[in-house]
Length: 227
Length: 408
Image 1: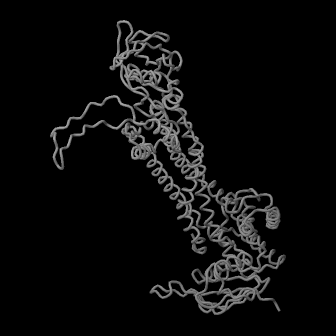
Image 2: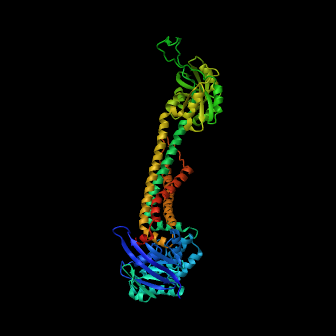
Image 3: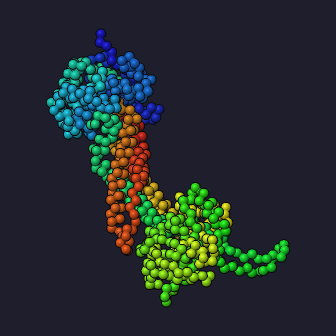
């Protein structure tokens, strides 16, 4: 039986709770994600996909319910502990890649390791170069992030997400802004990483073709899991 | 990226470099502000030093003179006054009572650096058909020349004062048609007359002074004025020239003398120096404030522009403290670099002004005084101002919610 990586238990999320404009974004979500699993999260816009991703990514906290990562309940962790757990367990890939434009592609990949250690080191650079090679961008690794194509930037973002050897990569519409060819190539890269490194992926997507190529598809509608 | 630099420094410098237009503008603003501070400080220090040198090397900082002679009406008894009108008596040339004791007491004071007894009075200088009324200062050259740098003002001859010597002002020498080596006949109101040799001619920088001033040996003056063994003035120099008035009051309170400080006798000059110091401080404060607001404004905009980057850094595990530091370092760096450039600009400005402006006689208007402490304090102040100005934007950046920040 596959080992469980994380679990959402009765997770609810309200915005503006207790005010007339109160909105329930997530309603009693129960979900388990196993190690090495490649999961697609689909649903219409505003259904709560991104909120769910933010909660799983420890960027946001549920109003009620619990998020258990590697058997540890995260509800009682303070800001520092959450930041540490997030840095070591979860990598992020955003729709707009969100590379930091003041740095080169390689430096962007080094960034999570640099943030954690505080200083740069040869091992950090070597690991980042290895990741750049894995995503096929070693030739342009010293280009400024802002001067790369959309597909290249998203590949750099994937390399950055893998920098801390996370157990899980959360990708919020990673192919949303790419043409079909680039989208396919980026998806294949993530699949390859998933097979090679055993990293779990949770991908929010509107692309049903890509969703079908995942191990499992979850659909959220109006804040509820429907499959 | 330099491997030895902490992440916070790398991020701070990269952010500044990426927004180079903004960075250049604010550094220019800081540089102008700091340049003004350096320029003003150097100019005022130079001018003040020059004025103080002129005023205080040609006069003592405290002068002790005998107390005013006053008339004391005879009293016949309780509440009965014999004379209803009391006229102020004319002030005779009298010696300071027990001046040797007072001199020794002054020398024993730690604040005092020099003491010189002098005998002042007036006389008539006669040479052939020409005669001029002059002010005689009888001095002990060994102590007096340390207080008033007479040798510095010599334009002809030497600063030698034996009992037969006299040093006169340039204009007096011209009026009497005398040169170094000539004899002068001095006649005092007491009827005493002496013949002295001119050993030196001095230029005190003022026509009025040059017409009247003459230095002779203390003994010569004492016999001319008929006050043998006495002195009319004790001249004093002190360590802290700005403490002159306080010290003068202390001396007057504990000795039977009248003590006049240079602050009291040059009240307008002292007020002018004080006003300059105050205005210089005000300029520094307001320039520092405008620099601080400039840095804060730029960093507030930078935080807004970089909120997404901040969110990403937070998502990647960066702590609030690291984000705070990134912006504090930016503020400090802006202040530091701006101050370095400004110090250079201010120095060039003051050197240029020094080279361009001269006195009517071609001598320098003011000396250039570039104190290392002024540079260090200005640069430290600007850096600290930068860090403080960055505090509000940095706190705002550190408190950003990653989700909100990434959403933009």
